[in-house]
Length: 303
Image 1 (tube, rainbow, N blue to C red):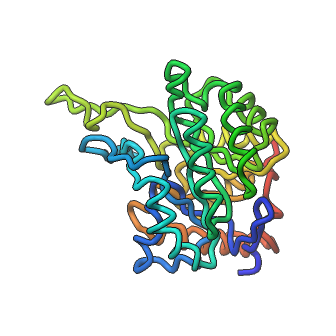
Image 2 (cartoon, one colour):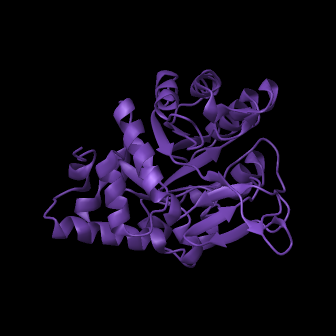
């Protein structure tokens, strides 16, 4: 619908609802269940320099109001991705973003260099929630200086828009948001999952094979909304909001908080068509409210 049409970092989107990284595979796996071109966009699962097998099972645990996961960033590696996945993705009309991660700045830069040599991507999303092995395991996402280092290094080698995905596991989000902006980020996305623990009381062991995992789903939505609002008010670049979105009205709340677009993650585990349904419901919300275009509600929170 025309009332949902928008743009993000100069990229035209048919609607502002994007399938999030890590919950939609490489997109192609869902082609029989979802009309991929009806999505506002999709972010492929994280890509690294070399293939990664991931964490031991069990990797998922359903909580009362969400899900804990510890997949371990399993992926085929960037070179296999560009050879085996990207050619088919490049034929889609929807915007495709590559999620990039690493354990030192050089990892991020190398993945970006490989992707830059191929067509079919609208932009990149940097997952900075990884420990920097050169700096004692400190996460890029928790240190403004380290974050600035990796963002500026990747920015120097890419021509496509660069989105930085921030972690909620920090004392204050504003310094990280500003550090990313000042280092060249074209946009932010937040939030990533919250570090969490589920315990089997009978076995006295974690319910996740790797121990701790990432909490996502409706349980985190109020905190995610607060962080998106704070980040959007701290920077001038656009923000993508995510965290527990399962309805069109949820999406509207993130847009009102200051996001220019949203991502849907955990809801796709219950139904792969959730991003399409949520976009439709968002359109219905706008129609009921008498709003001509989705951009009119972005950042309109009064407080």
